Length: 73
Image (cartoon, rainbow, N blue to C red; front, side):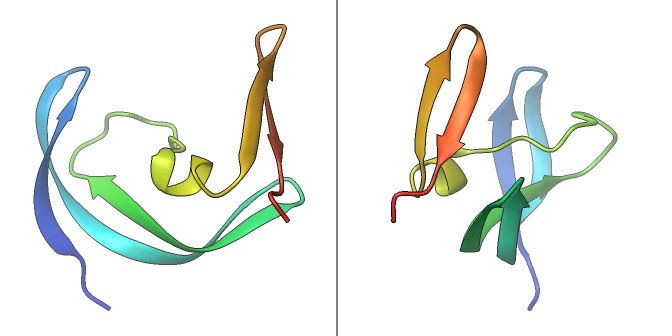
């Protein structure tokens, strides 16, 4: 499907982007289906960022500076 145009606030100010649904996001052995995502125009940030649309669907905690992700199932 097509994405929908959005304006979003980032650490660098306001950015234009596209909101879309990603069929699946996989981090290591952890997979979440049907995740809402935003793709920003331009070259910043260079890394993919996990947002609450993903993190709200898994268990997560911080241990000694490391983010640990686990299935809620």
